[in-house]
Length: 478
Image (tube, rainbow, N blue to C red; front, side, top):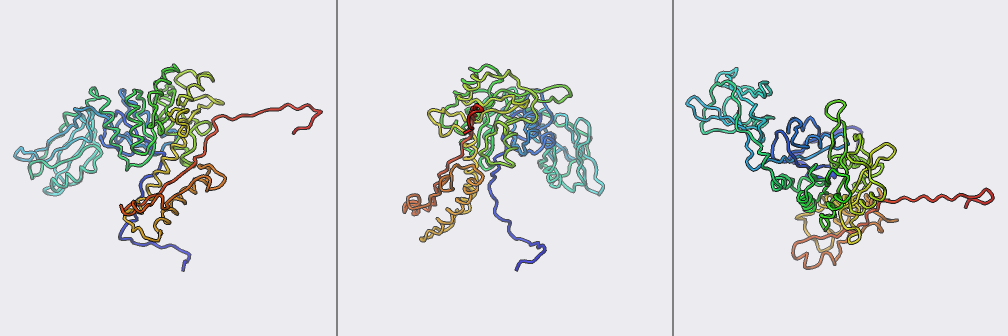
């Protein structure tokens, strides 16, 4: 019987994990001063700077993350792009017979680590040693007393600057003055489209849904790779178009991505001006960073199907646009082409379109980007539900089918209740089919469990009309 109070229980096994389903996450690739080449989640600029370094002149990654967080973003996965000959700086620590006891290697390639040094001093206890890491001559890390090389390797696993591996010798390193790591290089001069794609491909599907971008990149190949990645990994691509006011250039770039992959992609223009790093200055940043932040902000209190446009698409950080505003006729043409532009409305800069890149005539069912994001979220949550049924016995009474139908129906019911799905009733807005036409004798014999979801995402009001009728004082107002 329940009683007032609290209870703490010890579990032997943790509850099963669910796959990530936060659609506000942003996945981006770019150049940075330092850092690992495997994707890392970042939740603040302090984390970014600690892992990937300071702002650099040769990349826009720092600015993109900064703007994302300022617009309301909460989590971004960063995959660093480096050249084919990238090398992490390192230093060998020798034992008393000049054999290699330990190898100290910087976390990630780049010449930044050529200014990092390692020093070995005697520990406080007999037979121990201490490692000191310095950057630009300033101590940044110091180990405790290390009893052997294995302890040094373990300590290095938690370092923010280096990793340590065992050398050929089993002896401890000898005391040595600070020695610089050497050989670090990111080989960024040799980066090609291939290396950008390598970084993009490291965002595996199991990291979950969200938006994916290569901030500031406007090549056809970059866009093609982003669209393919989004479709393969249940994400939505946010593309940056060239920072230009030439309407034809933008329309041509958007048209180059027409096709089935375009269903899960949106293109945005123009770029935005935001406050600079130094007081009184500005920076020009690609619109994908603005849109990713706004999208994440909206997701805190609303459905993934909401259009990040109009009032829900207003930037809280932008100062101005990088290009003059287009005329109404030009905006209409850009919108038809799938180019989502920004407008100045009542002094605020609002994204004023939320379409995919599909041909609106040939594929009208997939024209709304909000609907595509909703599908992405339903895919993700549906996958979580299906995972719980893997290896369950398929009974002859249909109980497993009914249980699956119930869980999927409950998920979709929540979308109907928040108006993400269109219909007067739930039955009009979605359907879950696990019947005999879906789970046939052949599929059951093949050890398969199937479900088919049919949904009607709510459309967005792209055009709102007000008609005013002036009525003479001698007539009644109808």
